[in-house]
Length: 141
Image 1 (tube, helix red, strand yellow):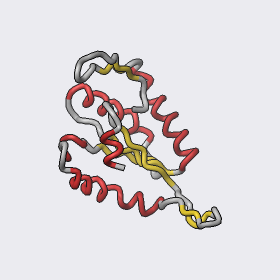
Image 2: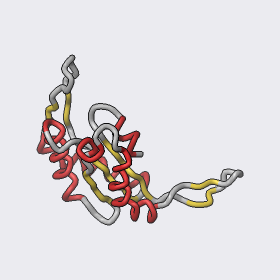
Image 3: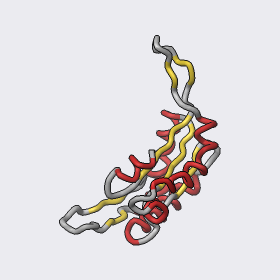
Image 4: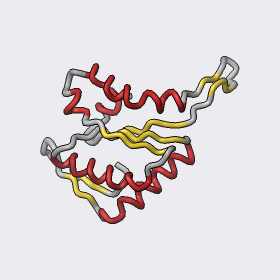
């Protein structure tokens, strides 16, 4: 999540999150996405965290921090992975894929020929996040 937060890792199943300096969230998010746009072009930010509990608080902060900086080259989508896919219905990711197909078509991919010459250039990047591990991100990508 592109703002300041921390989690004290302990032996509980879901350690609590703490948002640090919440007033700084918009500035931190703006800088993060400016860096991504400079490096990669257009950015599609996909937030995969839950809408409830501690994750829900983080997701709300992410959405509110990014809202003022959304533009033609920065798009944000929230997709509650656990609510929609659960632990086994990964075919439901097609719901998300349908929402982002236009971005993927427009921004393409990098293609090099066998000589290493650029045949097609990628114009943007998809940035995904989850919280507890990379499972949601890896399955989604």
